[in-house]
Amino acid sequence: MEDCDIVALLEARNEQAIAHMEHRYGNLCRHLAEQMVHNRPDAEEIVNDTWLRVWESVPPAHPDCLSAYVCRIARNLAIDRVRYLRRQKRCLPEEQLLLSELEECVPDPEPPADGREGAVAEALSHFLSGEDAETRVFFIRRYFAGESVQSLAARYGRKESAVATILWRTRKRLKKYLQKEGIEV
Image 1 (cartoon, helix red, strand yellow):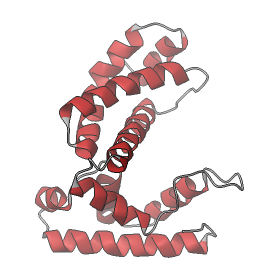
Image 2 (cartoon, rainbow, N blue to C red; image 1 turned 180 degrees about the vertical axis):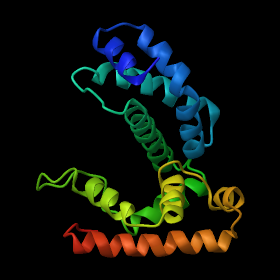
Image 3 (spheres, rainbow, N blue to C red; image 1 turned 45 degrees about the vertical axis):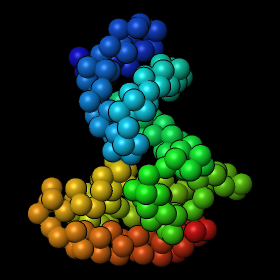
Image 4 (cartoon, one colour; image 1 turned 90 degrees about the horizontal axis):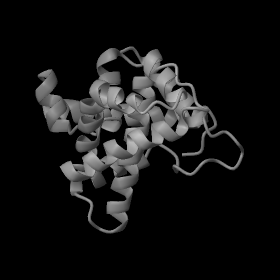
């Protein structure tokens, strides 16, 4: 079943849409959640919460790309879970490292008071579109999917130090880019 058909089922409030989303995107969401929380039961809960959030948000939302919409919701739920664990001092060092890496170049997750809520996302997207393919893949797999530096190095046949250096330099360029765009870091 195509994405547009699933969206149509959601808009018609047909519960079959959830089964189709699970079939089509369940493994992707599960993998994304597990990469971030490193806990299968939490990942399963995140996936189930993802289906609920999609059900509640469509309509009024009408996503053009259902896979991106579903992954964004799953990722945000996983980030919320990691933050909860971190507040409870239950977070693993890997998650703390991942979040601390981004804290140096991305502003506070609270929406800005000036109404420019999408400005950071738009700037990040524009920044990444100007990067080479390998850098973009490393950045997205590390900070969107939560993949470890070791895993990236093994997957792409690079040394861990090389991947870490690429990510570090990318974060530095991102910070400068965001400051140039007038986004407070």
